[in-house]
Image 1: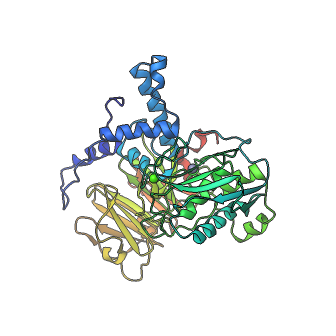
Image 2: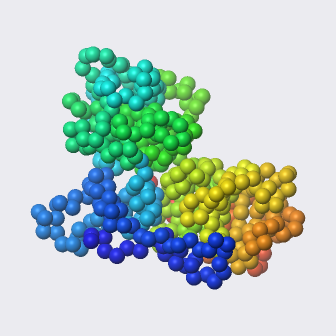
Length: 485
Ligand code: ZN
Ligand code: CA
């Protein structure tokens, strides 16, 4: 066994919780077993395919088990960093779950460079083969629109050809299709493309076994086409989770594709700026992925998750693990696919009930071990809020007191977690927490203090003296200064 003994981080967290004496209704969840042997083999194959890990090299170089393990561990850390996971180098259940998400078949470790572009800016493409998942005219229309996503911002044109040779040939295939990268049936790898060049260069292949419907179960052919066409034009995978060129497919059915600021910069770097771009930017500027070093950074919500702190912003989150200085950015949907919404209002963890609770508008979601509980989302009136309260700004859980404080405007509400009821009417935040301005964005316990977030200011609050201990920029906890970019 190559991996040695691994203790999944999630299990570590659970071990702490299981030790608590009080048994909640339903009992504690059973700790999940660690990755299976099949998971380990899958992970090794994944790293070989996407991160250049080559186990066969060892026979040639007479590599020791130890050396090979450390090489494997380094590649795993690289993968974990790429996906914003804690870079432990251990194969956790969560790492396996991220590896098993649908994705593009190209490597994440391939440096492309400036030379990977077509020499001409007018390119031709052809759609060939019979395995089209939808009618031919719909496919043509969809691919035309997907090319336009790129040609609207960069200086190049795409022309469709029916018969003659084309620069880019697009087709659907099942399983092995004789290019050295067989497809894997439903799920897993959705498509792949080849870098600009002659022959197979620039060609795009879609896995014909996927459900390319656009309802809640299938994948969006349009979204995947825009991503693959990016490769066909010369773009590598981006580690920016907001970019279309991010390798994982993490899109909700209602997702409306838009190139990110990073995608636009990257394609314009290769082909120059389209004359239409100025108009387009005014109408619909490409979204920037939030930057943890932005001095104006504010958060939607902050919560504990076992040993970690999670900072939410739009459809992204940063994860701060006590063992690692690095805090990676990832999509909320990467940890909770299709469950936890973006643009949250508030979140908290109740370790005694083994649940995480998320708020957006008048709805709330309760998750246990990363899974949504039955009957959720529910209206927040179920917690005892009067009908005039339409949303909460922040939530703060008190482990010792077994209660949760909700913040709405200048009011706070105390919720008794044992009785599952509000304790009386609202009180004023200004009286409960003197020195804290309202309304607040987020609140969380951390190292004996309450951290209140408002705009770009973080208030470290001492509960005993009922006073603000210090004020700092909101990103103080996100190791901004330690990274070079
Ligand atoms: Zn890709
Ligand atoms: Ca597949």
